[in-house]
Amino acid sequence: MDIEKQLDIELKVWEEAISKASDSIYGILISHLYLEYLLDRYLKVKLPKDAGLLGGSGLSFNNKLMLVKSFGEIDDQLADSLLKLNEIRNDCAHIFRHQISKMAVEKYGRTLGKNYKSIIQSSPDTGAHGIAPITWVVCGKMLRLVLTTEGYK
Image 1 (cartoon, one colour):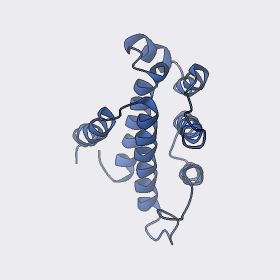
Image 2 (cartoon, helix red, strand yellow):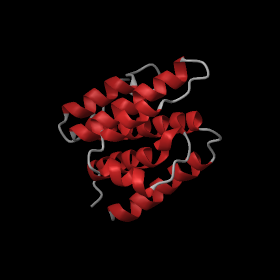
Image 3 (cartoon, one colour):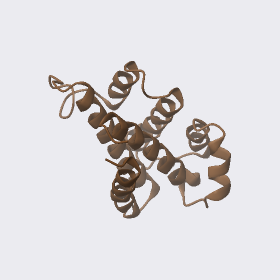
């Protein structure tokens, strides 16, 4: 199974969903849902008998991420990206009419290290201080980890 073909197929599904986002907060929520779905997929491979940990009233996003980290296959940079996006999502979900700050986006973007500068330079600010291209990179990295775990090469 070719990982690059599968990456293209699956990222197009996410891109289609995100393209329908009418504002940046909706885009954050869709991206967060997608990343949680990817965390669940990863954990289903690693924990085939999850005993109710996933879905419904199971683990929170943060707890799922900590469990994924415990397997030692997610790099610290990607884990930090997911934590920062989760913080932004929590602010959007719990603060009525929240406006995403440039500082929050920069903290999120800096989790990508040297790649952040090139992302900023090559991507126009499409709202919310350019959060979309950062999230695209994070989703792609997480999807690659999941597909590798699922056996794609």
